[in-house]
Image (cartoon, rainbow, N blue to C red; front, side, top):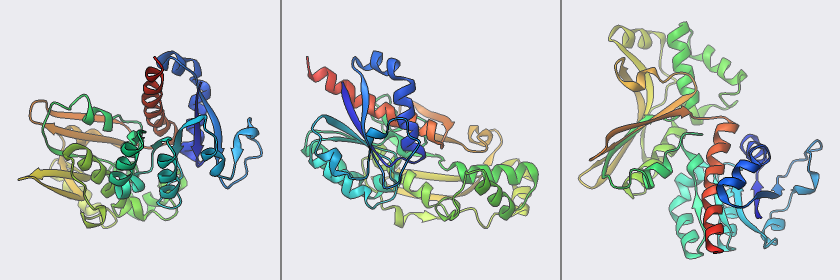
Length: 321
């Protein structure tokens, strides 16, 4: 039995719990052992949870349980996720996260702490939701020298731009619609002003090029100033507008940008609409490879979270033999 703890029981945390229950036998077959949620940490009350004995508001309940070997951090933001993650790693527990802000800001440090304590810090779910991209960069495409990585990394902005183009509605109206559907937060700045995409391209450039990039220093422009006239102008030129995060390696230096771009209709990125994401990787032997899929949502993100849990669990099982 491999015990895990879930820290933060929101959309992603609850979906991660669900996948461990619904796909329990499948996960056991693929790992060679069962994965069980031993603790769920959240400051809120969940009166209708089917397993109330798992719930706690005290992170120390996780740290004081030596049978818990993997912590899933799905709190979001920097505080207290950074402190909890660091404490878990230093306490000999591997950590899996979907927290893009934390990875973009402290990922290099936390990865080194994990290495020093002979545990893992994995973050497949921090970019692209359910799209596998971190592991392919590190493993499947590892023989390549990467020179550029770019794509549509934010489902909220892609949905807004798609609706503006297809229905001719103004930005403010589509944003309100996105908020009502749960695609955008009440404070949508992280999405529409490009901060979310900055964090994701920062993570991708670190993984692809091995160089850390300060997300706050990336040349950034969001979509809030895009008008119906801009959409029509792009259409007349045979293009569609997409918010693109882009990282290039030039003479050993990494250059990142986030900005709306006019994408020609014959480009594969042009057909990526609504909340879907797509990421293009350019390698010196493989040329262009595009990863496409649902870039947000609890279930898709939980799929990526569990892929990291399974990878760590397989290592634990292998170490027993």
